[in-house]
Image (cartoon, rainbow over all chains, first blue to last red; front, side, top):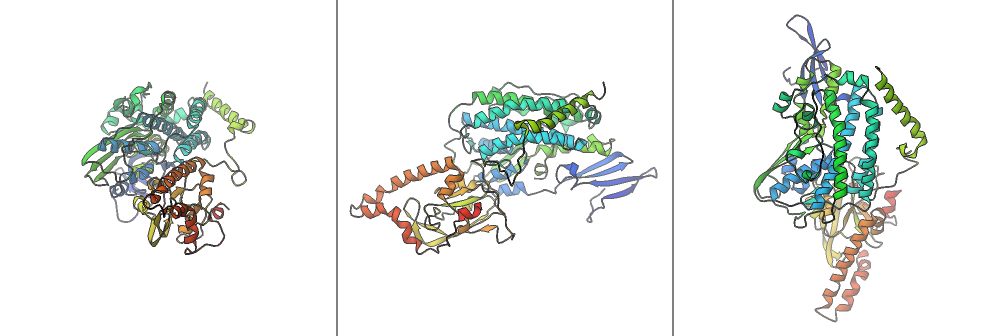
Length: 384
Length: 219
């Protein structure tokens, strides 16, 4: 299993102690189940996984080093490309870190806009994750297309607000780039009001399905202890029964103003992780309804913050938010120059992926695929 | 009963299938080349340079201050400053770009050039039906290919363009009386200048053929 200079063949036989042979296969990087360019070296004894080694880095783009050579504002569009499903939460995490670093106040209205866009992002991320998970399980197409139909409505909202469907580049230090366009809020209210109907439909379609239960229950179990000690965050941690949601713990932004509950799992298996997403969508809808009702008039950005020649005082800051996939953190050190001295991202996908082997040992290959699917990774964020 | 969950799910699929023929709401796709969805006003893809009036070169708002070149995160803009000057949108004599190239294969459509431009000279297009046959030459757009009229800008982003025009009109009104104050004799030509000036410099500029770049990109 040691890394060699030459590329290993896609499959090879290894001798076991008992005289039989193990099969080592390379799943990925271009395997449809791996959600991008992720590779796993899996050693099999018959059908059983006895070793699994993730191989990262096929999508490495030097994100952190680029940001250290870029102005503070110039890194903002690059954060879109970390987790390209949730560019608005990525923007928020980065903006939050810079605001902490430079001590910038965010106006009320901007905070509401941020909450609305972040929760819409969570809705579309979870909806498509459930769709992809079903796709991995062999429910080819139908649930994924239903999820994408709803996602499209939210992406249209993003396009009308930010100008882009996915690479939004919308948050700015001290607020947002532009105000909500006329009629946007009513449109968004309509989309949010129609969303529970889709969730009901989705649940009828999937939740009681015997095949899904047989495939997911008791598969890929992550124990509470391991989840905590491995630093797992997000829906994956909560599926293992740990009540830890940064929206409740940190209360960043204005999350302390909304009443919502944090769904918790019990078994930490694939089924719990999948249910966690469905339940979180319902809670996001609650937050959205409250935020859209209460949003005040006022400035959408802090007028004192300059767009150009932005130089925070020397110091360091760590800004973290509850991204749809887990705790997304940005660590910044400023030396007073226009670009950060050190820029570091704590990507939830990568850290949630570290326990993949523990969840897959002793299961078969088909279970590896759905366990990976339930982790919810995006390779843009894993490899950066 | 085992299997009832599956049957319920199949009933839901059937409802969606039949619904896609019956209800307008469930028809989520369009037959793209024949049928097109209306463009969303705020949408953006690549930058273009705005010019006022009919002549793209004379009316070009860009004064080649090179801020966008400096701020562009992937560094896809290349500008060379002119040695001579021509009047800008407000009527003040300014440099203009002798060269202004954007490599749209590098551009990531982040809109930061638009945000930092103090002259409202660069804006985002939303025409998406582009093609190029050459990977290197065709994707580097020079200043003529980048130029679009203010009318085109009004067409694609009406709200934003109206705001920009109002701001520019205010700046022009503010700039016009200033030269009149020091010498009363110079007042008349100075005020008349913004309107008359484009024709003067147009003769020095290499005038393109009658093809309007805005029309070209839409075709």
